[in-house]
Image (tube, rainbow, N blue to C red):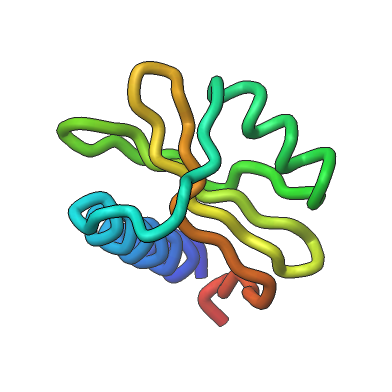
Length: 98
């Protein structure tokens, strides 16, 4: 059971990283929300109740995925302690491998 949960978490992390890398390679169509990493995370927590569920590293940047109890989520790209919101949504659930 624990291995299934870990496997599911790694799959989710891998998918989040692939999405983030895809978005990083595309030109921005709209102005991104960026700021110091601690301030952006605090703002997401205060405004939407989101908390960090995953951190990952790429060659050039870090990726942070946040989630809230009501299913809201965000993906942030962090470079040199500046976090930019690249994607977010309102409907999600964390699959615990069941």
